[in-house]
Image (cartoon, rainbow, N blue to C red; front, side, top):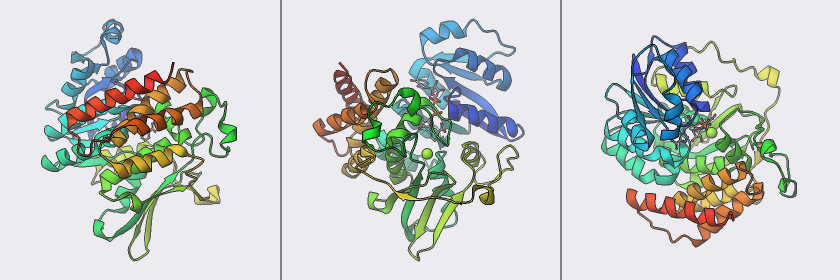
Length: 383
Ligand code: NAD
Ligand code: MG
């Protein structure tokens, strides 16, 4: 039995993680969970899974939450401190980080210090402070298992392989909601259109990130840290069907790909069951005959400027990706709130990057300061 702490239980990855836990009740138990604002959904989860610890996002949400009654008793906490309390709960073996944004960083570091295996969906953690997370994981001998489908695919393709034989990673990208539009056609697109992803149903932030292709940019940086490879060995390939989840090319020109119907429960389950595999009756079998053909295209860095920003920031390193991520989080929130246009997102990121004086080997404190400062600057561009 593996005991699981789930950070961000009410989100898209959170919900799908719970489905995996439910499908394998004899293998996995939900020990602790956190949620941000959705008290009603959290209450349902708590009744079904009976965790010992629940962290609530903020005081205001707690006021709503405490009006629910439950058939078992459990401990609660509130705010960022409680996120950490959940992440280090002694009973948990695995911490699934399904939070969105760099708020996921501290709980991850603390969980590592407490020797929890990390199943990481929260890519912003690696983008904002990849070197610190990696050093921490190494120091405490803690595995970081990818949940993101592309990274799970690469991780699976690398089983039994010596990483020194890798020539390059090929990270596939669906292209998001606007993949068939020109730059001109991106002017004036609405939030509703941007949220309509053709292949995946996900949280709002990552859906917008997919439409700008920042998601792929963040994933390239995530891959750099997870697989310890320089950026010139990480390529992006457009593949609109999202059937090949990513590939690894080796020096002998052999390429190993991982395929499957787009279903996040598959990589989530792999992270939870690793190194074992479990059956998954609920997921749809891949039927290539039915799909008929798979398409590929080159990623256009002029059309998708966020992808360009991500590669550039990643190559510079230090606090540059911290700024990339913070400015992006603020810009996406502003777009979702109707304050800026879709193309306004990349303008904000570009300006934030341009003015930033990079710190090359930042401490955690410096990262937190740079993150705050970049958000403040992004906010000034909204008015
Ligand atoms: P989501 O918005 O659906 O869920 C986020 C969860 O985090 C919610 O439970 C929310 O309450 C919680 N949360 C957010 N801010 C918080 C805060 N300040 N304090 C406490 N809790 C907070 O997001 P998602 O789509 O599930 O994505 C989660 C992460 O996984 C992201 O980093 C995303 O990039 C990554 N990811 C998601 C998918 C997907 O299919 N949804 C696929 C690959 C990777
Ligand atoms: Mg992904």
